Image (cartoon, rainbow, N blue to C red; front, side, top):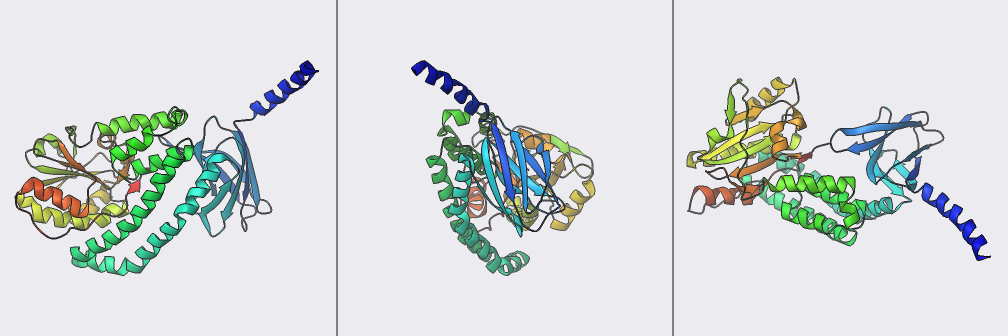
Length: 390
């Protein structure tokens, strides 16, 4: 009798194991019958890749497929802006998408999607608070930028960063409490590429992940990027580079050494970078005569040299500017592990990194210490949210 039961159990076990990597996605969205839906997998190296298409019928669509490891997926709808992100993994995934905002999605049915929904609900109230603060103070920010009123700008930034800190604290606690999930890995990647927290904190969170998560394809990739980023960390010698100026002259980093130097990664198409440029101009005007130098490294796109030059002129960037016009494929950005902009590195006279991604009072204080023994009062405004590599 036992042998018979065992014989019956083995085929059942084989059947249950066979489909562990297979997924079924059942999507629901109203008002777009007849539209095509595109299923995308998000890839760090090549960007989003469409892997399947379906059609919306009676407010529903469906995808079937297979995935070896959890990955970040998205669906987009024909002729509409925005995407709905979720976790692609084995199992039955239910998507409920808001027809008025594709980014508003409720994904359930599998471990990581349930966890992502849990995290979203956790931070939604804080995100709403941040958006309401930005909306309420938008006019004040514009007026302060126009008049270069650094006191008001810095005060508003402090209030906004206090809200951001609440969100960061929630994220860190969630990562630590769910270290065996892909969602935790995804949130750590966002912190690293979005410059949320310093490198030491990101590394500590990564080291706290479950070994199976770290040994996944994306886990290994993040570990490699962390190792590369540590090579350009505070206390390390900044790698030399050379590139062309708008006038076609080739200049190198080593030519600028001997002064306190800021390497400022930006682009003409980057909104937060352009908003930060007036602050960089004010910083340069205040400290240049005391020994500050800035090198702007633009990640502008191929064939868009004119837009790069126009932005330099319009924003009044009088310091050295270089670009390879290769966007995220820029070799300098790759050397410095730049995954989001604006991003900056502050070097001492010998080319050693003394600060990384500092803004506002922290940046100003760092420059004061490096350039003058005498303290100087008065705040500098901070920087807007960065643009991440897609």
